[in-house]
Image 1 (cartoon, rainbow, N blue to C red):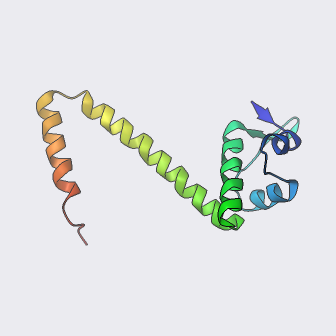
Image 2: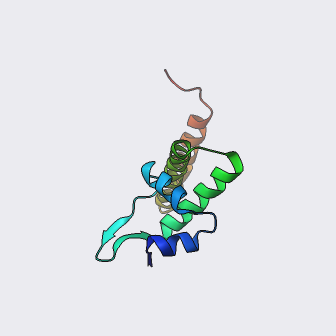
Amino acid sequence: MTLTEKELIETVARLTSDRLTEYLAAEIVIPQQSDQGLVYHRIDVARLELACELHDQYDMEADALAMMISLIDQMHGLRAELREVLNAVQTQPEPVRTQLIEVIGAARFQPPKD
């Protein structure tokens, strides 16, 4: 699914043309160039809905929104990586799983090394 700018503004309830321009400058979304011109994807709709909600609820500036959304992106990436690690651990034989659980558990409760 791709949307033009007009379709995007119609789809995202709180999005205005001015707000989109501000968000583009802050690189909250980066549209893709196509034969139709600039187009937006489903992920852009989600990012813009979140940006509009945070903007309205907390009166956040576009640059702060960009940083917040970047942190959320990083968190989602880390969660996906953790899922992969957990799936890999799950495929190991029981003695290996037990040892990994012990090592990870011990590491979690140790103070960080400087």
